[in-house]
Length: 239
Image (cartoon, rainbow, N blue to C red; front, top):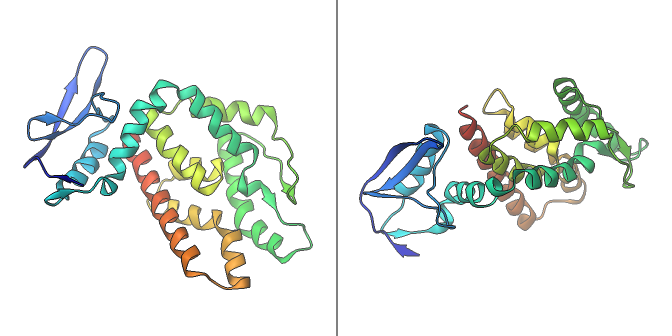
């Protein structure tokens, strides 16, 4: 930990010929990323959320208690330097999306997946004008090229901050459909419902074989990370 070196936390609006954003100020010093770039945030609500992290620090600064700061650094230092690479990486999750892979039709789990996953996937297809291949079993089947092309075009409309949040959600849920649905959610409670749906198979196994407290703790941490990433992406969008 580092001893707290500042008293006041404020926001500064930065406007230039090619840049506009908000920067958290620790006394008179603007926060920079790990890579040394000014940490310019695209919306005031997102900047306020990061400022709140700094205000909550005690006499010692705990880096682990600054997760939004870390996501912003990643967006600026990594994603912004190669958004196409980030989009292409996310498309890999569309190819093996959790919501598309179901148990064999004669297994009880299949009925639960149809009940929970199918409405979410069908709604996503309708909203985005795409079609996904459903798969029973574990053997991979490719998704339609037209679907992947439309999804890539959608991903490239997102700024680096939204992409960073989306990438975190997608990896945690092993589902691009879940990540994009959470990003586009109209209500704050929807990301939690989407996360719980993505965990259907895990929950099914826990009910069937019993719960392990270490596994439950890991899942709770993943849920917290997912909801934080959803909030980060939506704040970056100005929602």
